[in-house]
Image 1 (cartoon, rainbow, N blue to C red):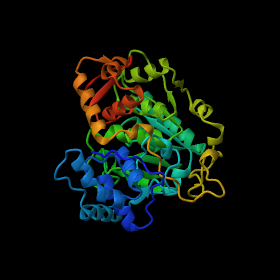
Image 2: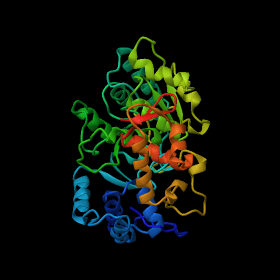
Image 3: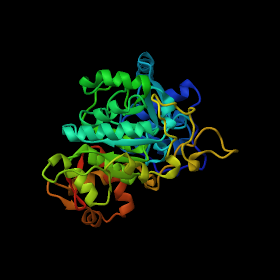
Image 4: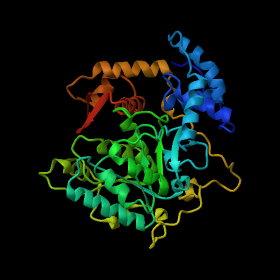
Length: 404
């Protein structure tokens, strides 16, 4: 669903008024508009308002009749619901937007947050692992998170059972970020309701999904990319050979971040994923010292001996290369569309269909698929990632792909 237009040289405008923010959210919530399409439409039409006007025409040119954009009343209802639960809307152009998250491919244009926004400017370490974690696994997660919190790091995790829960609890006083798969106000699992409320008092709950949305399976892989995107390094404590934690690790690698893993006994299935990561080159973790040594020197905060830790001034940059120059505008630029986005939406949809038609339950080598498609690898790779995040395909060891 696109038209053959060339991106303008004029940068898209950030939302500065409530009506602008309504338009951004309305564009993002419209049917068939994902994150990549959102940025491309902004680049082509400069403002969300203009993109909304053009969207039905673009849909018709792609053969989609009767297309309707998201109703304004539903968007304003979402914003009222967010206000009722105390959630803040963070656009990617806002100074409170997490600086490292802004650097990943197709970062969330809009986030909902409940808690201390200032925590987003502090250095973070992601920590994830098995939901059915062993006693040793939860003990390790608690020890690592508590030690890192004392050193001034924020722990980002997914509020799941097992390792995530242990890490959040150990880092509560120092500050922790829980990235939610559903709405920022939806406590999942329900057993972590009290923990989620405690996190909002000393840390932050974060989500790109609408307030009130009940999480579904397809939301978790996209949640995982935010966990790894927030952090300069991601630690896997326990993970099975096929688990969501390995998706988070793969996201981290694709985002150019460090991946670290805690080794486990070869007979324990919950350690298979970590041992596999270590075999493939991940850094081995024995203690928090190993994690700190892996981080860039400029990301080492001043140790805080007494908890709760003192939160730095909001919006403080944590790395020199993302601090604006003295004469730079105060509002960060909207990410430029990636080269892959030069494809029209119709071409992207056709490539999605071709890939899904060529794959089946039996694994197929990725390089063989690319040869069969007769399409450059740099165009196929982002489409494969989209399909993987949507849960349509499964990536297996050895560069093999199959349908889920």
